[in-house]
Image (cartoon, rainbow, N blue to C red; front, side):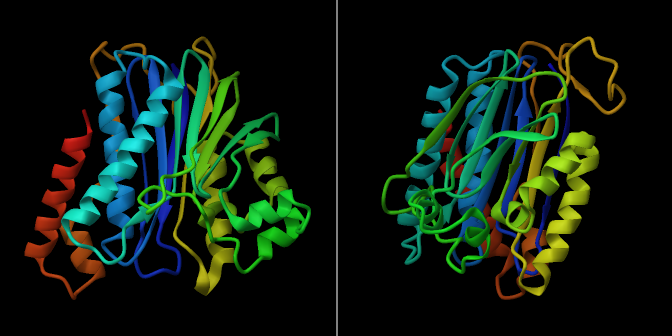
Length: 306
């Protein structure tokens, strides 16, 4: 496999960043995950953290070096993440269950498969056009489909962030699947939270991603999304790849080449929970409490990563 990749997560105008993003790849398979946590501080980020770490752990167990039955794997992974979040909530007697959206994409054999719950999105770009994007699990999206709102009105609707499917909710998540979709030279896949896609018109994303690979387009789009979010801006996160043919000379310097990776080797880039960072953001919790919470999250992930 050969691809360029970019990921970034920003707090925006919020006090805490509850988004989590990450990727992992073997010699012949690549997993991309974006999760947007919901709930009080140290709850939303718990749900999103459990999700990305659990999915990465399952991927590393299954990709030898490719994942058999990709869509079945994605269904299993998101379902286990949902169960793990509920288990964490029950064990801690939480009044508010941590929840998270999730969009996960598996790429292997030059083909993309994806699954999602909530309103974090995946876009597939080719030649400056959106070939497809995921359907939000939101009431506003249902209103658009029923002809009650236009797409433009939906972007400004005050309830556009209210979703009816997520991981960790009391009702089992509605999970939608996409693929089997072939990737060609120059195609880009972009996974993002609503803090990123919300302020960006589709034609603006197409203009940037039609002219530049993700390494150059996404930082500029992040700047625009954050600026437009202003003082009320949400957390915003994006993870994207531009697919390259093995024999292409394009973007060789910045591309990831996996053919030299051992059959049992993996490269993973995830944002991990860090006690120092949490203490910096929240002076009201002790380091001992944070370390205990992190240890319990690790135990929950280990239990379901089988």
